[in-house]
Length: 123
Image (cartoon, rainbow, N blue to C red; front, side, top):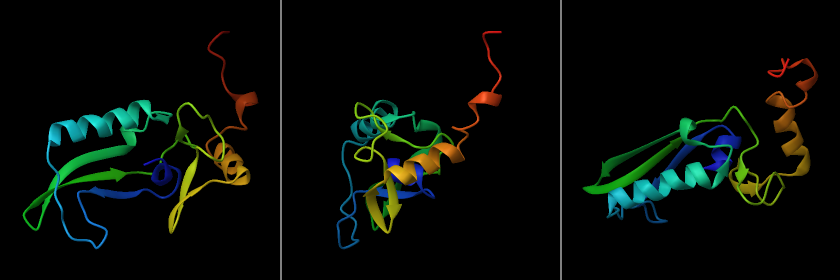
């Protein structure tokens, strides 16, 4: 989810075999709870507003579809590790760790170099 939010977005299908056939999922409420907790507690900043979780039927099997949009507060990272290459991921065909240069570019693109012109709330 982090890699998609740091890149162009994408879909994650839970309940699909590696060969593309539908395996289906059980315990749907528990699965949604785990996914939402991962979004809220496992990534920084919180990714919940950039994701949509829904179940779809595929060949008679229930599959969880997680639609992730490109985020606006990049870089997104694994909580507990901070903004470091080993906790920031991007999509480049597959999921890979972001280089320091890519992380710095994300910060600049989301306004990280504009703090001098930002309005202070403590005036």
